[in-house]
Length: 374
Image (cartoon, rainbow, N blue to C red; front, side, top):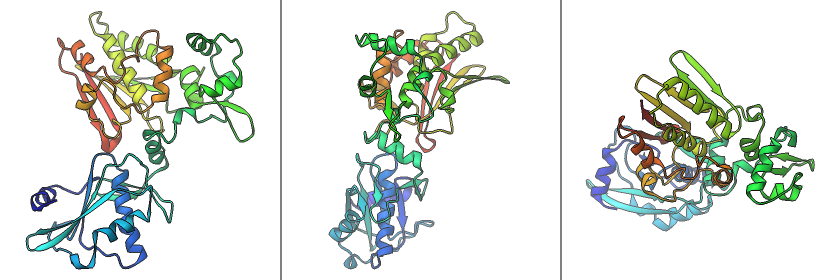
């Protein structure tokens, strides 16, 4: 860390990974918790490394400085280590800048999110330039991204085995070379399709409902596809393969062009279904048909560490819902999901003669968009 790096920070505005603080105080327990809270929030936010600069007014960026004799690197690290769980890796630098000393805490990218305040149990996250308490869905999302839990294996306590399509379930088992008209509970639980609840009753899981549900929207109302065309709105419900089939038929009817690359459209839609954030229960997948393009948007920005360019180059990218992906492959007779996550270049090529395809990752809104030309 040097003065040139400080100068670069000062050219930027505060955000999820950059915070300016006028004063650094570590005298009281509340002050120690405050510095830990800010570090935890940056560590829990999407992106790479984050930085907190002490000795800079956050609104004006006026340089004030800190007294380096009052603090030590090990002291600050120990404060954060003893109050965050799991401990957040940080580095502390004291940098001479414009005749004063600034303290810079570098918050390294963490693969152990979510971090919480040890003394209170609270989880924090950055919303723009402010530190806030993380919502339940955000905490669950971080846990899923880091393999601490799988959303798909959570049981639906109001659902029963009668809510699953037995024919689809038997077809899946047949593809696994398991012949059974009535698969036992041990097998179904091992596959993640049922889970035992507190009352010792087995209920279908969320993943089983997405794959085999007769009417998943009864239990998962946010799992829908909304198609907008002019002043018309169409809602598509059903299990995953039903939604792809119905959506493709609807778009085919709207476009009515036998030369349109519908397979590429289906691949983009399959990506949206596979990579959507199912913990975001306030939004579904939107398909909007305009005069000269189709926009597919799904809740669920690329998971931490990925970018659109990295995703296009990577043959084996990180996936948000690996449990779902593995099971979709076994059921996927039309190969919609075989290359899911690696098909961006293929989609671009399919539309080469019609116009450019755009992939837009909006991390601040937890949203991913694909724009396909007409």
